[in-house]
Image 1 (spheres, rainbow, N blue to C red):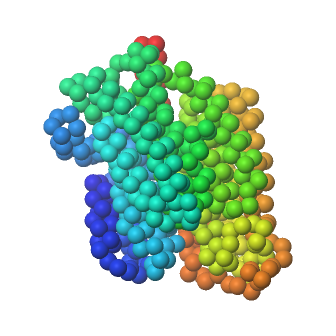
Image 2 (spheres, rainbow, N blue to C red):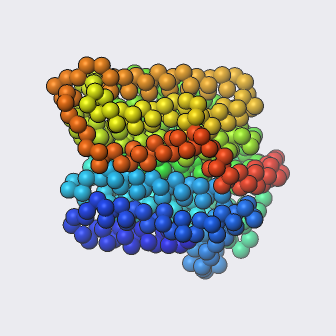
Length: 483
């Protein structure tokens, strides 16, 4: 499984040395991780079903006995590895090979870092991959942002770097309290913390993860970064990278600082619900399609965070499923916007209209992504959103009422975006222009997941349900031990 890290790094170097690459060669490079996963899928799935806990699969000494190159796998990890290595090839298909050539090696480098984040079973190794995944997106925004790249990138860097340092401080503190100063996941988990210690350690983790998700009010970096970053950068940030923060909550915060959960739970729940409503209201008022999607993402991930902090089975299952669904849908939306901007010269809703008249296939595929995002029944957004709202309702009825507003608001801003861009009268920019079918290939992949997850959600949930049960038991056993 270490090939999931090292092979993309090698391919990133190879692609950086080449001047131009055919898009199909790029696709083969990007598919490397998915091919490794599918080749080992039956073995991994069988091992996970047999033992649902976080199992070590690679363990090499790296810095003495304290830090090992230790990788692990369970259903949660496998599910997010699938998301990462499915989306990377889909995103690669949207890259124009004659423009922005650095996107290819940066994307592959980021793929290695993301795979490492989800598999790391050592605290410092987790931090290392967390930072490695940041480097490519930093250069993407710095080199290829549409405008004001320096200010946008620096704001993004400062927010994420400060959060990362806070997490590093928490990991180092746990390491100093562990057996023989080890940073192994199991050793960090077994550290006994007082309530005060747990609150401070938890603060370090939560700051890093809240910025990455992002949670309100730590989202200030997000709208401009998503809006002005190159389309592929926006896809990577929203489709995969924010899942690092949600995964961090599940894997690192809840087990490592369980004593602090009672302290932080109401605070995070309130911030998450505020983010759901705030992001949706702001999205309704946007005319820039990328900015609209950015605020919609803030709203959707707020609901996922609320489901996690409800701390029940339906919340964890719904959060994981919705992490996958949100990744698929938001990448599909950004691909559609990228296609519109590339072919019609604008993504401003006031300058579009009537695109569906001469592009019926694109209109159908785009609509499928939109109704998936709205969580219409029998689409991929419905099962996860239902479980999340149920989990929040079980936690607190008032919170569920406000979180449930996402159903109405999401329909408003998504259908408004579709109506203004695809329907109505054509103008001089949109009349009689046909989108090449080759550009629609990634949308076919997205549409497949919109339908398949909507019709057969249990097929996907079977991958991680045992692991979420095991993780919840670990959290339950540790929660409040010394408080």
